[in-house]
Structure formats: C-alpha cells, structure tokens
Amino acid sequence: MPYAARIEPGTRVRLQDHDPADTAGLDKESGKARFAELNAELDEIQEELHAAGTHSVLMILQGMDTSGKDGAIRGVMHNLNPQGVRVESFKVPTDQELAHDFLWRIHRAAPPRGQFGIFNRSHYEDVLVVRVHELAPEKVWRARYEHINRFEALLADSGTLIFKFFLHISKDEQEKRLHAREQDVAKAWKLSAGDWRERELWDRYQEAYEDALSRCSTQAAPWYVVPADRKWFRNLAITEALVERLRGCREHWRDALEEMSRLKLAELEAYRTLRDDSSR
Ligand code: ADP
Image 1 (tube, rainbow, N blue to C red):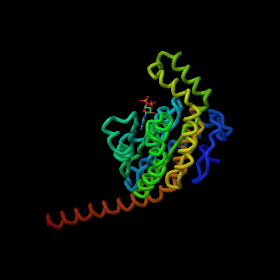
Image 2 (cartoon, rainbow, N blue to C red; image 1 turned 90 degrees about the vertical axis):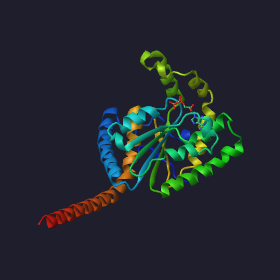
Image 3 (spheres, rainbow, N blue to C red; image 1 turned 180 degrees about the vertical axis):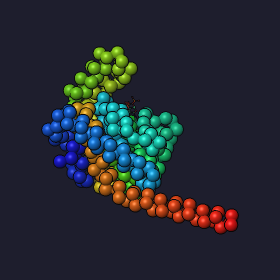
Image 4 (cartoon, helix red, strand yellow; image 1 turned 120 degrees about the horizontal axis):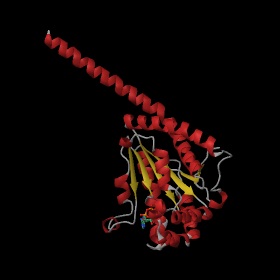
C-alpha cells in the first residue's frame, strides 16, 4: 500500500476516513531509513528531468495552517539541485492579480520543461479561503473546479507531471503546534492571531477541501491525502508518491539523454574531421 492515498477520479473524499496520524506500521527509525533511500532516487530523477528537458514536474502543497508545507519543502527537496527547482508561494492576491482571472498568476509561475516546480499554496486557495470567507459569490467559485480541471489538463498535455498533496493534520495536532510556537522563542516569529481565527473555521475548511479533492482529482493531476501528524512520515509519503510515479519516466529521459549524447559526439567528430582536413 502506498503511504499517501491517491484519490481516484470521481470518488467522494471523506477526510475522516483518512487517519492523519497513520504511519503504515513503521517506526520513525525505519521510516527515516526508507526516506533516505527514496530521497536519493529522487535526486537522480531530478538530474535526469533537468538534463533531458522534455517534461516538467509540478508539486502542489495545500493544507491547514501548521500542516507542514514549509517543512515538507525543506525535507523533501534538501538533496535536489537548486538550479532545477523553483518554489512559488501564493499569498493574498495583489490588486494587479485580482484584476485578472484567478489562474493568471498561477500560469505564469508554472514550471518550464526541465524544472521541478513547487507551489506553496496555489489556485486551490480560490476554492478554499475564497469559499470559506465568501470572498466571491458561490456562482463564481463553483465554476472554478471545472476551470481548474481544464487548466491542469492543458499543463499535463504540455508535458507537466502534476502532483497535488493535501497535508492532512488533525485538529488536536494543530493546537499542539500552535501552542509550541508560543512556547519556543525561536519559533514565535511564525505566530499569527490569524491562525487561531482560521482554526475556528476548521469544519468549513475541511468541507471545502473535501469538495476540491473530490472534484479535481484526475488521472493526469491526482490529489494525494498525506498523513501529516508525524513530520517524518509526511516527508516519506510525499517522496514515495513522487518517486513511484516519476520512476516510470526515467527510461524515456535516459533515452533522450543518450540521443543527445550521440548527437553531441557526432558534432564533435565532424568538427575534428573538418579541422584536420583544413590543416592538411
Ligand atoms: P503561509 O501561511 O502559507 O506560510 P502566509 O501567512 O503569508 O503564508 O499566508 C498566505 C495567505 O494568503 C493565506 O492566509 C492564504 O489563505 C492567503 N491566500 C492565498 N491565496 C489566496 C487567494 N487566492 N485569495 C485570498 N487569499 C489567499
């Protein structure tokens, strides 16, 4: 069984059926050892993705406050070559962004071929915070599920391999993490009264997430529910999902790289022959 649950298109997601504290029976030590193996493979995969330049990867991270989006980026990406990785964080839209359609700022940030792009929050905020806080009429945000599916299909058809991870934490774990920030002076900079206010809307957010995950999980752009109460397991589950799917592309990338090598060698040989001929 994979560690993160991949949502089959058309299934109705009920978050209460997914245990945020799940560790698939692993203890922390064996989980970390497995993570190290998979992370080393992810490193190789990224090198090939970057060099072959035929595809891009887009990893979208969503989750309640304190669910560990930043930690997952640090943990999963720490071995990767920074030249091929770009993180985009989506905040409250600016006036200029609001003057465009909701996907405008997202599309500009989509990774080009060869790049591994990470979205820390994303266009899903436009059916999450916007829905919960009634920032747009229902008619507007309801139409967005279909817009999102079509947009992601366009990216996928253009060579983007899409992964959408919902970091699933329990309400109790969130409370612990918010209190921990207060107690640790080194982490207090992360504090925000807004996090406590948002927490009061927990059920409405869960409902909005269930809808987004149910309506927008497609074959080309699946959602994964990641048990995120244990940080080490969260990182393991994300890495496993990435490696399991991307492994299938490695042969294609290696073929592309071999072809590139052949062309370069032939070019070099042609140059030398020409040089030797003209110096005779
Ligand atoms: P984070 O919590 O991700 O570390 P911030 O504290 O800066 O970073 O939070 C970013 C805020 O921007 C979140 O409250 C999020 O809901 C909000 N946001 C992101 N996208 C949108 C959007 N499209 N509409 C309204 N608010 C948004």
